[in-house]
Amino acid sequence: MPRREGDVFDPYASYNYKLEIDGIQSGGFSECTGLQVESTPIEYREGTEDITARKLPGLIKYGNITLKRGVTVSQDLMTWLKFVQDGDIQRRNVSIVLQNELKEDKVRWNLREAWPTKWTGPDMKATSDEVAIESIEIVHEGLERQNA
Image (cartoon, rainbow, N blue to C red):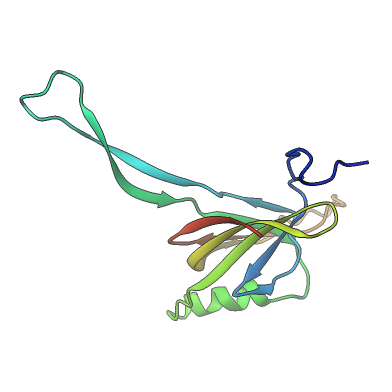
């Protein structure tokens, strides 16, 4: 039996998550990767300092989020991508929500100003019995983590 939350800090399982786009749940995904933020350091040294360069924070970069799921009749993400293809980039707020074993929201990563940049279709093989998997890559301009 799992321990009660609050007794100890047991980590949450990585398979209990969902995707929300502007607050609307968008299907189930088998994989979600790319949650990362990086600040590129700038090395700086003045002539009067010793031989050690100082490091200052530079540009902040956010990783692209890649989502994979089995192909279904749902076209929600493809419709969003079609807007981008037509030159109408609709930036949306996206949340990746990690849940506990009881399917209660616990940790939320909010992406701001997100839009789809790449779609990859399934590999078709007549000799395979695997699920047809599509992937979509989403870019964004901000990442914030909060407890739900």
